[in-house]
Image (cartoon, rainbow, N blue to C red; front, side):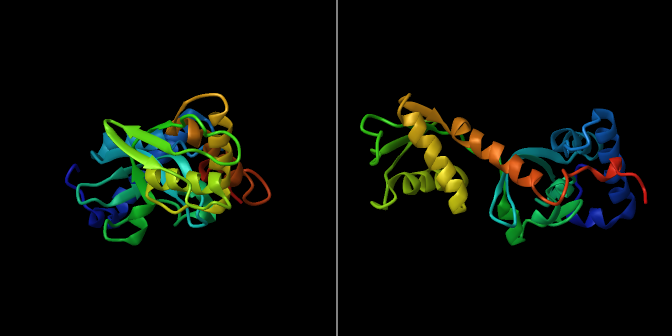
Length: 222
C-alpha cells in the first residue's frame, strides 16, 4: 500500500491492522510505560510502505515531545499510531493529520542540528552574540530584551531550531542550559541544548493523572 492516502485509513481493516501491529510491538518489547513509537512506526513502514519519520511534536499545552516517531503517507497525511501515550495532551489514540490541517505544523520531521558558538563575553548577566552554524549556514543571534537577556537569547535559538514560539518554562530551561554551558565551553550543539528539555518533557508526561501512563495493551480488562 505504498500509494495509500488518508482515505485508506477509513478502511476498518487497515485501522484494525494498525492496532494489531502496535500491540505486537508493545508486547514484544514489554515496556508498558513506553509508547514504542520508533518500533511501531517501523512496523507500519514494513507492512504498508508508509515512510517512518522522527522529530519533535508540539503538544496541545505548548510543551514538546523532543523524541517522537510517526508515519507519513504518499499524500502527506501523518499517521501517529502511538499518540495514545500523550493522553489528553494530543488528539487521540491512533491519530491521522491531513497535510492541510493546522495541526500538521506541530510535527517537525528531521529537525536541523546547529552548533552554537557561544564566544567570549557570554558569561555573566549579559550574554554576547551567538553564532549558529549548520552545514555552512550561519545565523547570528543576540538577546533582544535587556531585562531578560538569557531567556530572550534562548527563545531566539529555540525559534531557529523549531520554528515555534515555545512556552516560557521551556525558554527558561533552555536559558539556564545555555548560560551554564557558556561557563565551560565555546560550542554547544542543539542536541545538548534539548537534552534537559527532553528530560523535562518526560517528567511532565509522567505527572499526568494519578499514576504513570500504561499502554492500553497491558491494562487488565474491567
